[in-house]
Length: 625
Image (cartoon, rainbow, N blue to C red; front, side):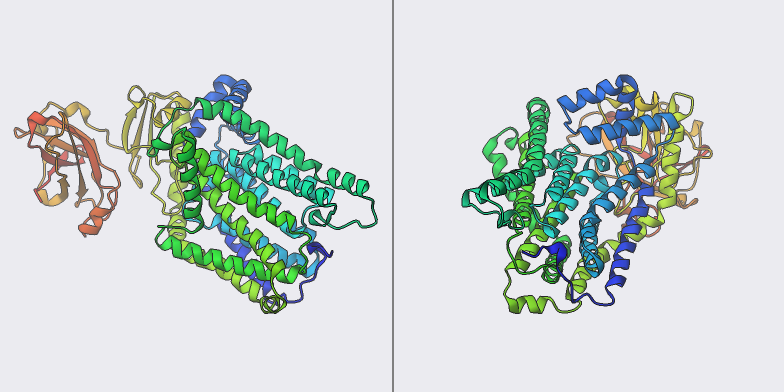
């Protein structure tokens, strides 16, 4: 039977290379955004752990909590490099992982030749772009800890999918390569173990069924000249690598069950399913269906379904051109399709069973990848089963290229405004990241940092840090504590985005209990705007209060709010800088989103009077609204 790698592509249009170039340009744009990669508190916790426990700590974590030998060891080496150089090395780390992703995604197309190689490369590159083009993808692509675990896993998925669809199963060299990739995915993240387990098991089952029937065509090219014992020996040797990947994934999953699953006590919004088998099975199955059809996703449903439909059409048309109608090599695509469905279910079931909820963004990103892998496998199978009339229609010149290009253009158009917005904030993002690192390494017990501006498409790593002051003794088990511990600091003050830190005014906490006029001159109320939200009637003492304020004289949020009682005595001080995008939409004079504040106020001192601290010597009374 003629294999896909040796088939012809008679309908590649002359402008195919331009679409290929455009797709490569899109990839490079998102690749360049690795410059804006970030740490979350996990990296700071790892830095402290590596410093204190070294390699022994990594081995203990792998055995008891995170059975990911490859990614955990990569992160250990990364933290050693960070400690040795005194730099975060975010961009070099992410760029290396992205290059692995790019190389492995395009690896299967290299088995094709001439124009067929270009057609296969286009299909592989479009599949890669669908990994990237999603609104909530930062943890997978730009967070160092997440990327170190999940980019090698996704890279292995893409390479295995390409080899299964382009080459099929049966050739010892290809099978060995696929098994090695499965081991890479399994040792990088738990979802990789699910995929390696199911894919390897399906291939081995196909081998056994083939031998029971007394043939070998389902696993690759037939060897009619060989006797049955010879065929069995050859086929057994060919599928032996999958037995190895199956065993590796089983060992890692046993460690997962004996470690994290059995010891974890976390619960969440869906705690009714935690450690309950059938509720977790039901919710996992329903979640797979919801994500496959993008239920209740609003505009994302339209964009996502359009992109998936166009990709399925384009991939089917491409396989019609690159492959003949024979069904002898469909064991690989069939195993791929079933493995992706099973992996998606096991991923959601495991989340509900262990934690009672779905976590996190990176896991959802991987499940989106699985959907496109299933579509790729379906396209390969459909292309081999179509009638000659339908095959002739799909083989028309340029149809595959047009459908694939549109499948990329639709989500790209939806993401473009957010992408342009975030690219424009790159300088401020990098400056904020540099300042955080420099403050952490500087002598002294405290840190003064500026939060990066909020992005629409990419995360910044500051999501766990509140605007204002956090002291070590008050941090508890919060994620900010990891940052303070990593740098051996006692206090961190986070200023709002775009703040100037050349001479930042300190919060006048020592004014509490003093008359306000002892410290500042009161200006005219026309110099500022602001308001306090409604206080809950049944609130405890002290009362939680919140509001917003804007300095009209300087066209910026004031550094702090002062709350006094009726006699003018300062009773509370609050930093200004919480994000309140609703305020500038409602009040045209306000030109910043970061005008919010919150604090507590003594219940017995109500009602409170509000003053915006314009500078260390002037405060503006907030007129009632």
